[in-house]
Image (cartoon, rainbow, N blue to C red; front, top):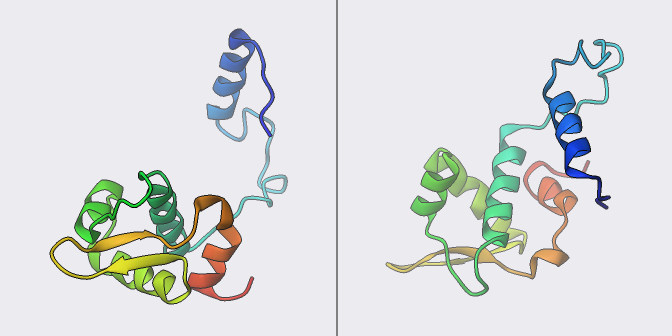
Length: 121
């Protein structure tokens, strides 16, 4: 949940977030909470977020997804095939084919996407 803060305070907070970890007082020992994810998970989440932002019923062609998200087309195709098999996206074949979410975005969790492409966490 987001909380409101005055614009001047938000600017300072934003600048602090951009500072190097050492400036913020974080040492390698205190940075152990950083989550590292595979490229497969990264690309799957990025594709799902993009599809969630499309108007309802719109189909995104694979080529458009790859170009827009700056992802390798063939690797993205493999990821989307897995997501389709798991029922997270729907694929349409043909000249006007592509991908769209199989369910409303609110019903799809990041965990579900992660487990679809990498297996149980």
